[in-house]
Image (cartoon, rainbow, N blue to C red; front, top):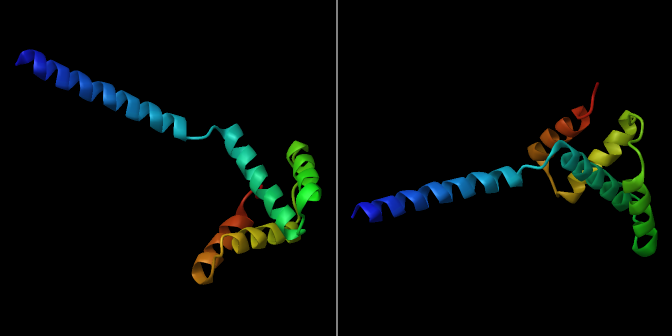
Length: 108
């Protein structure tokens, strides 16, 4: 009976450790988050420019390989945020909230 309780306790502790480890793996690092944001921005720009096929592939390669651009103008940010909101099919208050947060992002 004691052996059975010990096995159940060991199984519980082991499964808890794996669950915590899985949670840690799901959180992207700051570098990964930056790359994901860059991918979103490049994707939105390519979509705004209606690029397709080889032209899109070349644009994405150059965009993702480039160094971060200098601070975007408000107009550039508005274009990117609009494209992102359109891609996400946001409407009404949800769109207003998204646009507000998007335009505030990366302010000094």
